[in-house]
Length: 63
Image (tube, rainbow, N blue to C red; front, top):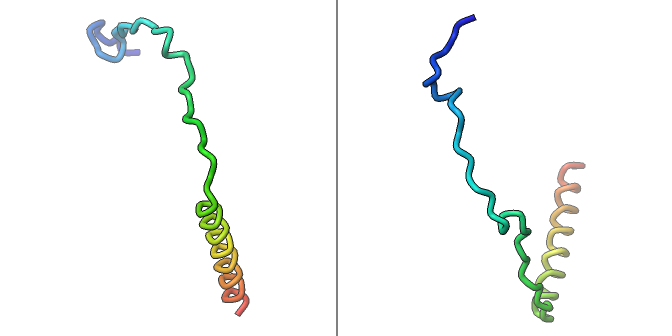
C-alpha cells in the first residue's frame, strides 16, 4: 500500500465553520392570499383543457 504525504489535499483536515443558531430555523413561508374569482375560473379552465387534451391523445392512440 502506498503512503501519501501529509500535505496532500484530500487528507488535510478542513476548518469547520461555527454553527449559527439561525441556520437550524426553518424558513417561513409567505401567507397564502385568498384566490379571487378570476383566478378560480382560470384554474378551472386549465383543468378542463388538460382533461380534453388527454382524451384526444387517448383517442389518437386507439386509432
